[in-house]
Image (cartoon, rainbow, N blue to C red; front, top):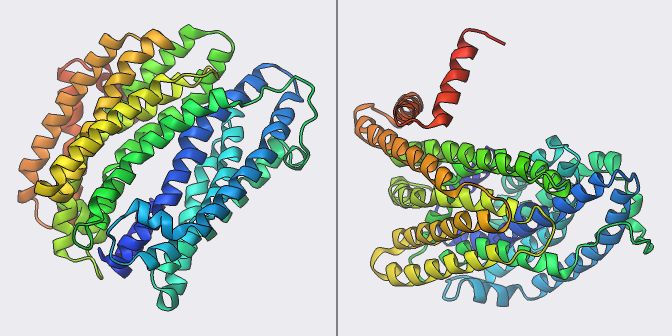
Length: 489
């Protein structure tokens, strides 16, 4: 929610313009850093590593792991951040060739490059805390981050223009570390961070063989955004901004649905570490169905009410009605890939839960990225930003299908056919709910009223259709609602 306020603030002050495009090019660095260092790569490597250390029942194993890995990680990230700051103009030319104001984008990139270091420390702390079953502080990091961006942008935009937003990114990264520092100190301690481990052989090391496939998978996933901005850079000013706002809002249901997998990933990793593959299988299957139900419910709402959502969230200040129409149209196209994004996020975790090298996810992501590049290059000339969004949906859906079919034979023996049928029922229910919203939205008046009606109509139609189709997720959810309404324990 604070991320939405951040985007609203930037849209209000700078609209969809060359300035906002310059910031979003620089924003590519923290986006990539977030994927690699907080969410996908860092979590997929370190949560299993800390889970294995905890499963050893050795009080010193966690501290030895920290002292063996953190000092090296800190040194590497410091060097990478310095290189990015020094090479900011080259980075901009690589990310957005043909962009109209590369100097402004380079200045913003120098500021956002600091997140390589701050996000790395944040991700390390988050992985350790999640493995210990502590989720409040890791969940709070993005609140602190966005508060830093919003406050700095509002305070300095008159003096620095859009550079103030880039400075806010740097400030927010520091706040992310400070939010987690007390909890990390309590669970792990600070001494291992500054005293490298003596080689006793007890702590599991995180080697290149384990790290490389995870990094390639995460880079491939985030490269979807790089491809979009590369293709959109030569388009008229505001194209990158329209894509960004549409993507950020459309992916809210996906982010919410993956909260389930974020919390249960340490459970799967712990089960794999203890050799209980049956418990891991049940957990993964339930996670896929639950996350799919949540993201499809959100998809139906996004498709049915896209113009009203964008109008309520962004149409003020420099962001006008034309920007709303373009962004809403792009967002509806993005929605076609939300289930794919959700499944890729959910399926990637069990692949890496065993703490051993697994290359299949990286290969599947490379195949999906190839689809995105080919489809985007073919469609951008005739369909502009909507063609780019459609290519994104096609590419990520390809990866999701490959991962779903590959998981059962390689890591956890899930019943792919049964999971596919459960998700197919939910897709039909979402289609019914989206159709109902599209029919009702024009007749419900102003945008806030339309959204209020949709917030009731879409879940009712979705749950009703899912129950009629025999989807167990809807039956369980309706039973829970009835119990709550009766105040049953």
